[in-house]
Image 1 (cartoon, one colour):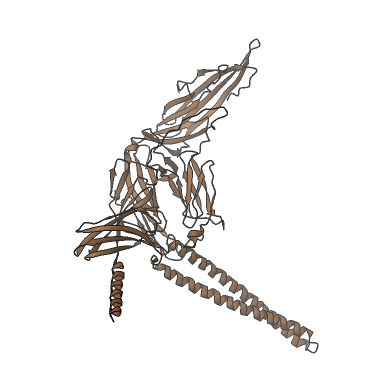
Image 2: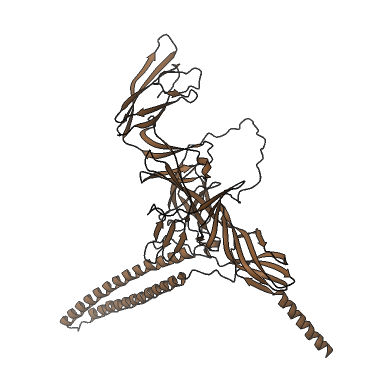
Length: 633
């Protein structure tokens, strides 16, 4: 009896210990603030918590599965102690899907049912066709059959077989139409589920409190699958107006958690870049060592991105210049175009469900085939582009998307339809190592990997307009705008869309790595300023008694302003520069141009009145040994 009581007591103690060990409290937290870096984001969650006396574990659920565990911080104020913080993945609590996914899947199932019924009808139709063909053979072997009846039977079979074939064609057409619709629904469901994952994570916080208490807990952590890059709209009304620069951010994230109505801060910092300072290694020279020459200049890379398995275009692929803030994405046909700062730039291609790829911008055209990632494809089915953006409702500054299945997404860009829109309130904070843009309006950024446009700033600045031409290279005259003190606006490197007189004229690149205080922008060509460059005479003087040959070049440059207003034109040309003491270059006539003797560059600054024409002469002579070959242009 005593042993039995002792066993029961031990059992109760064990149950009590198990109960205490499982004394956990599930906490629902909300994302309040997100600081988005060029790569990565710091997420801040808050939640009020009622603490019971004793030791308990607070389980903060539905956290992003891709967090940096070392970055987790927990803050709370009160008469209690935080004993430990732990992170764990949760494979049982699947992320909540957007509600319209079930509706799309229901409609997709209805289409599949229709296709199945039509396939059954097609099978029955084929069986009837086979039976008629078989009876036709049997009837033809029956010699006792009346000829009239035989003719009637053959006529019936002909009519019926024709009807069966027509019905078969109709069913096939219906099945083909339904298959197209079914594929669209499959692509749309994939588009909605993009970025979803069957795993979340929990943050377990163990606390000890002597008394019951209430506290506000704050969790911060870093997620990696988030980024932003800048783009600009540069507008000039005419050559007498200031330049308007719209500073915008393209925001995207696939962290596994949606950011709904959060306070968004954009930071120019990049926590993924190493914080260790570089160290110089010895610079050794030896025989046989050489350095390759300068690569050809590449300022823009274009191409197409597709899947390696099906060769179908991939829309929405994120493309970034590695180590910079320059980025873009592919269009509906998988095409892209991106400005590059130099020919050694490395392009990064990333897309959900596919492996990331890097390519060096050594050629102006790069077509990329992305390889499907087996790990990610286990979670989400990736298909081609669908014209149905449908059922998506996104909201970000400047972009509103609302559509339904069967209709193209309607995109409205704030400020594009009406110039009277209210600008976004943004506060710039310049820290020691980065700049932060605190957006006043709350934002929602779903975890779908799509680009959401956020307006940062809009500035009006004076510009100096000047026409430019280098007739040796091209006789096209370009209108340029020079902006001074542009560094004070805290711009990052990025692509710029150029608009002049209300018309889109192309793209340019704002490269913040340049040390000059003046930013030069090209605003397109002007056909009303005509420039020609003509060789007047080609003289080769030979000295019969000497050992040298002389060649003279005389160029006539004509400039005419056909505009009804005066223009300021900068014209550049050049004379050759000798790199050998045996070759002598004599400049004979440059029409008062400024000359750089080291490079041979000539510059003329001309003020042309309306309908005025001017002529400039460029004449030089080259002397070199006549037993050598020198090509003189």
